[in-house]
Structure formats: C-alpha cells, structure tokens
Length: 151
Image 1 (cartoon, helix red, strand yellow):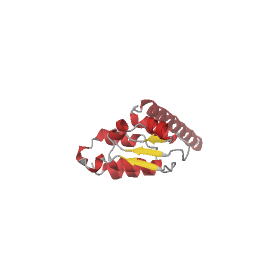
Image 2 (cartoon, rainbow, N blue to C red; image 1 turned 90 degrees about the horizontal axis):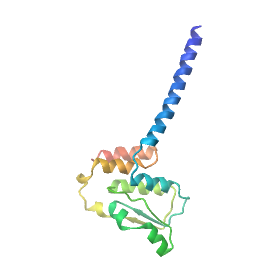
Image 3 (cartoon, one colour; image 1 turned 45 degrees about the horizontal axis):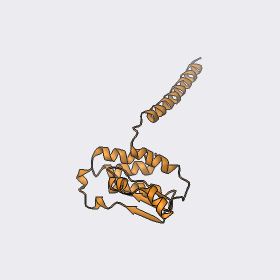
Image 4 (cartoon, rainbow, N blue to C red; image 1 turned 180 degrees about the horizontal axis):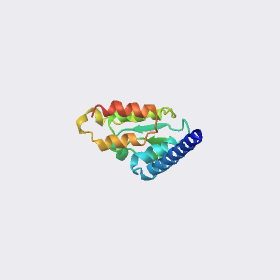
C-alpha cells in the first residue's frame, strides 16, 4: 500500500512539474518585451544558411545609419543587420560569433563607435536588450557572465 502512495505522489509531482514548465514557458513567450533586438535575431535565425553576403554589426549608429535593404537593392547583395540600439562592442562580437555559426558573409561591417566610447556609459538596459534575443545556449550564458562582470 505504501509503494502505491509513493508512486501516486511521484506521478503527481511529475505531472505538476510538466504542467508548470509548460505554463512558465508560454508565459515567458507572451510576456517577453517586444523590442528591436528580438525581431532582429528572430528574423536572423530564420534565414537560410549561408544566405547573407554583407553583415552589419554594431550599435544605433548602424541601426539608423545603414539600411541593409537599400544596400541589397543597390549592390545586388543580400545584406542583413544584426545591429542593436545601445549595443556595446563586447556584444557586437558575441552577435558576430553567433551569426557566423550559420552565415559566411563576404563582407562584415562593424561599428567602431565603441572603440572611443567610455564603457562606463553602458546601461543595464543596453546589456539586457543585447543578450535577450540570442538563442539560449552555453555561449549566451558565458557571454552574459563575461560581459556582465565588466559593468
């Protein structure tokens, strides 16, 4: 009789855990803030492998200064921007590494603003936006710990 109760309690615990995980995952998806970086990387992850000829990386200077669609039309190249508002050079490198897992662009344009910007200007919201839209992976965790320690 005791084994039956333990079994029933175990089944209940497993069912509860599965239901909780499913609800938590769906709540996270629904409540995730909708900002530029999410759309940038969500769309990037849907690109066919090795389909980008020109890749733009960096901060708002690239977001507002380089239009990948115009470059694509004028140059006849498939251009894409993974630049984000407030993105620091550390995360530009992380995004570039992430992009190079599935793409082999002929040209990579990197925003140089952060070579002269004081790193203390970096805000937590910038870090948050920069890391949010990357896929969950050990690389994402490692970059969060590496970059987060600096600020």
